[in-house]
Length: 117
Image 1 (cartoon, helix red, strand yellow):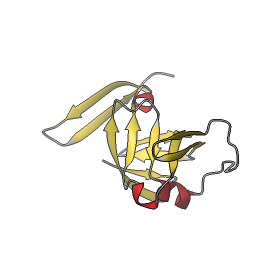
Image 2 (tube, rainbow, N blue to C red):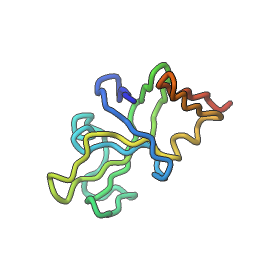
Image 3 (tube, one colour):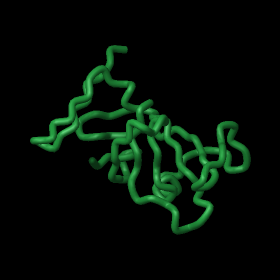
Image 4 (cartoon, one colour):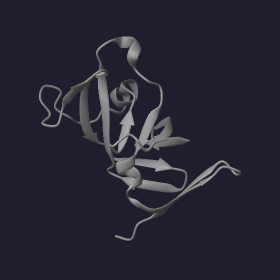
């Protein structure tokens, strides 16, 4: 599925319920979006096999007709340049914001019904 980040960047996303975060972004997309974060010591940085993971907040993400304000995003500064992905990941924590998620395979649709505030 395609999403639009900060009203400017179109990015393909895959759903991964095994990914415990909200949204995982390719580093190149995160750099173009120019998130505000402290590159030298953001308190929730950590290392994984792909590199240094940065946590930040996007202005918004639009998936179809659904707009999410200030979603949490993570991205890795790749340890090696060729390890960067070209797709974003929608994780379990992001999906947890919805009361019902319907995968309509026949019509190739994902239907997200918001949880009541």
